[in-house]
Image (tube, rainbow, N blue to C red):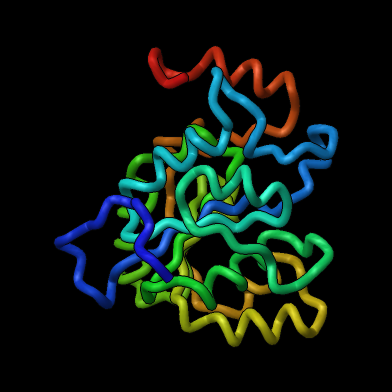
Amino acid sequence: MSASPATPNALRPAERRITGVLLAGGQGSRMGGVDKGLVELAGRPMAAHALERLAPQVDELIINANQNLTAWQAFGYPVFGDDIGGFAGPLAGLHAALSRADHPLVVTAPCDSPFLPADLVERLAAALHAADAQLAVAKTFDQPHPVFCLCRRDLAGHLGDFLASGGRKIDRWYGTLKVVEVPFDDEEAAFRNINTRDELAEAARDLPAGAG
């Protein structure tokens, strides 16, 4: 895979380098069936805000999308679809990413979360290594955020077997792994996602000045 324009973290040793994955493979059913990440937020595609926040935190950035591929390729990052058909959910996107990532660690974030934390990857990675875990997942108070996770690339085969057996639920797959939950109680608002037109309008009002 050719290098993406993500910002390299030169001080990160090779065994701890991270591929970032923007998950944009859903159907956007709660927003009328549109490709949600391409919907404009303050004059730019919603995904552009998420990519802008995620890119500086990783060593490589790739996008999982299953429709409108030309539009997604316009962001300048490698784009790939699920290897399992039928819009099988975020685990299918993660599975496809694990087989394409250049680096041994893979972090995911959804395309409809334009406020994602600027220190998301740093905190997930610190917890993963401290616990010698297979996967680290963000949590605010009692609410886990399973699509904000950092995991080891070598889980590809394990996840493939889970999906091949018909598994689709993230929490069931996580239950088979050594997982560490990482508290982000101080950044609860950063994990809000946009599912409706009303939420889109509210998010536009809350963006920092100049972010459009």
